[in-house]
Each structure stands twice: as structure tokens, then as C-alpha cells.
Image 1 (cartoon, rainbow, N blue to C red):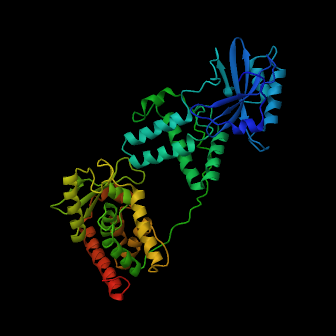
Image 2: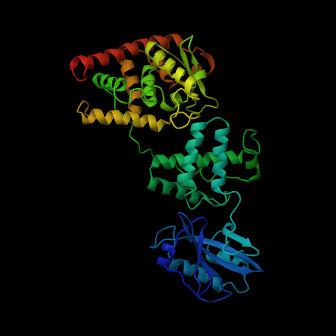
Length: 455
């Protein structure tokens, strides 16, 4: 920042942060009157006012940069006007008086002594990103793998990338929280904004109760957080539309025949989809996590762990293996034994990992697109539509709602199921899946008999 070099909008917008933030100075040659700075981050541009007092350097954040005037932001000229106020009252004034003149909170004032090179702003040890990372680790340590991974994704893409990423956890106000959520809603969707809001609120709540909660990370107890700025933020209205795609009997028959034939019919991802359908439409990632030790070959039962919902421990979910499903699982067991894969539906690239849900969804999309191009169906479908289709078709072949819920492991709340009914429903599940397996075979045979699928 040596030499006389004034700030310009072109200079601010052309600067790019690399490994560290870039600091630019509005240097007009004057001394002792403070200096307007702009900090260029990977996704933010912030104005600061820096001045010296008692052999210490104070840096005050005064606002966010914008080329054009808009609420909550400052143009370069507006920032210069605010910095000029600080310069006018600098002589003989205290830091508190200057911060008042600048119109900013005292929590934005950072004292440094002595300054070191370009490091003009001392970051807090306990930042918003740091807090969210501790929450992510907390979820993973307690066994919530899916929740932890989803939180990690949101941290990387929406929290660490925001201008509040390096803000001290105690400096974040409700107004800041609202602005953060609003930006996510504008860039992505209201649904994603609600998820980010829930993540941040849960992270703050965990830190607030850390001193009295033995299950909370111990390092959070060192952070004195007294309030959660995200509790007061309003949840946005859901902008998603409930999906309604249900495959007809003919479409279901076409899909089943497509899963049995073709170049990829023996690929692990296709076999998972077949097993999922035979077992009544299981969630892709839960089924993909099944290990060889989760199979009881003598009893012909597969054990899954359903961690969906507000559960501290996953719910054990037992599924009877009928003839077709049993043959698929036994074949997969043999392959696991010979290849050393840790999962029944193991990743081709890593023996210690299972298939990812996105791989399974893509396999269904490929079949759907092919059937659509061939004119055999008129509307595309995805993996989620299969689960909905099975629920709908099961109701039409007189399988009761209670048994359908047990087969698909959903809607099992309430005092009766939680505290009293300890049945694993193996017999009703087996009877329902016998009816369902016959139904799938009939749909496939009807399609072949009609000539829609070559024999």
C-alpha cells in the first residue's frame, strides 16, 4: 500500500483474493487523519477505517461495498464521506468517539499493536465458520453421517463463502442473520435458505448449552455465547411443489424389464435399484449402506438402519428377502467375499465406500431418458418417483397403510409405536412383499405380452 494511490471502483472490483484477503488503501498522502481501506475477500468487499491511537492501530468496519447505492451497502463516495467524519474528529478524540462518528458498533473496532505488514485486521478465533465446523463434527461423532455431510456441504458453499464467514460468533446480529439467509434465498432457493438457517441456529444453540450438555463438544464451552441471532429470523415459505409422478402398471413393467436387460443390467447400481423395488421401495442411501453382516442368510432377512427424522439412534429396519431379492443378495455376498468390499453395494473405485445416492439416481435417469426417447413413456421419472409409485400401487392391491408404513419405514411416530408396540412386523412384511413381488412379475409379463418390450 505504498505510494499515492486512490481507490477507484475499477481498482476495487478488479482486485481478487487468492490464498489471503487483499487490502487496498485510499492513500491521498495525508498523515494522522486515518485511512479508508477496503478488504477484498473471495466473496466479499468490505470498507474499514484505520487510525492510530496510543501506539496502537485500530481498524473499524464501516460497511459493505457496492458500485451503486443500495440499502445495507456503501458506494466508494459514501465510504469516503464516513471516513472523512472520522478524520475530522480524530485529533484529541478517543476510539469510542471516533467509532460513534463513523456510525458503527463498538464491537467492530479491533485494536492491534503493533501492525504487521498487510495483516491489518485481527480475526477472531471463534468465527461463524469455526462454530459451524464444530457442529458438523458433533453430528459425525454421534453417528449422523448424512446430517454431518449435508451440513458440511452447506458450510462450504453458503456459510464459508459468505461475508460473515470470519465474523466473531458474538458479533453477529439478528440483522446480519437475516441478510445471510436472504442472500442464500436469492442465489439458490428458499428451501436451501431454510436449511442453512436451521444449521446456523442449531450450531448456536449447541454452543449456548455446551457448558451444561455433556454430549456437546468441550471446546464450545470456551465460547461465551449468550444469544442465538437466528432464532428470531423468520422461516421462509416453502417454494417446492410436492412431486406427483406415479408410474402406471405398464410403465412399471417397462422399467422392471429395462432393469433386467441391457448392457448395465449386472452393474451394482442397477442391482441396487432392483433390490430396492423388490423390498418395497427403500431409500437409496440407506440400502447402499447395507453391509454383509447385515444379512441373515438362514432367516432370509436384511437389516437396515433408518436414521431419518429426529432420532438419536437409527431405527432397526428388518426386511424379509423373498426369492428374487434373496438371489440378488446372495450373489452380492459372494462378490463381497471375493473382492473384499465392505458394503453389499460397494463403490467400484473404493472398496471401503458404498455407492452414493447420486450414482443410483443417475442410473434411473438414464433408463427414464432411454424409454422417453424410444416413445415407450410420455413423461420422465426419477428414483424418488419409484418409492411413491410402490406406495400407491401397494395401496391398490389392498396392502394396509400400517404395513406399507412398516415396509417403507415411514410415518412411525406416536406413543403407540414409540413406547408400546415392539413387533418387528416380519410376518406382515413378508406377506406384503410376496403380494408385491407377484404384482411386479405380472406387470412385466403384461408388457412383454403386449409387444411393448421384445421377448
